[in-house]
Length: 208
Image 1 (tube, one colour):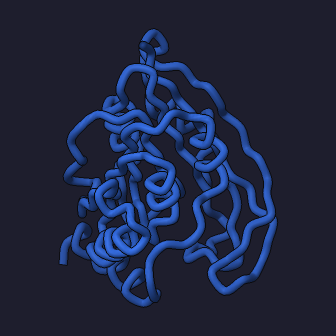
Image 2: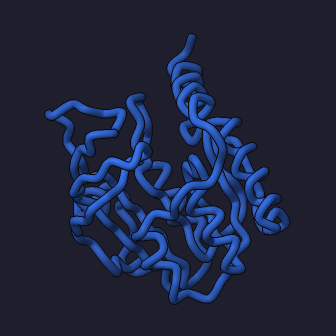
């Protein structure tokens, strides 16, 4: 089994073990997108689909992308149940080998972490390149380990927003860092447990 196969099996088993689709939208996505005029969004690593569905219910057209076919299928099914199926396009991609086509007003990469080798810098650069003029790339990473996280390694290094920006190596003449900070918040896990967590946030706008 190749590394790509192992990653696909890992995430497929994870989402197959969970019931239903949907879930809560990530608060930093809500904070960023709420004041925006709806357009075309790309949800990288859509997972349970909370962000995709929140955007679609507010008039966005969303390309929901995940390595797990189960995750993608469930998000599309839930979108149809909510009456926004026409606004959601599901695409299965292993982002190490393929990237969705098109251009977007908003690209959201929420907690795009994996225990497998993953060319994050290359993927996020592709996401920045996929922005339309004036479009936003929102990258939200874990800055701490929650009790419910699949990763409980205390030695994990979470890239800071400045490190992520440096890895993107975007031309400042074409892209502007709008936000780079590490807010803390009270989060709720899948079983209802709560903990204070840190998010590493990078928001980049493409020039007009």
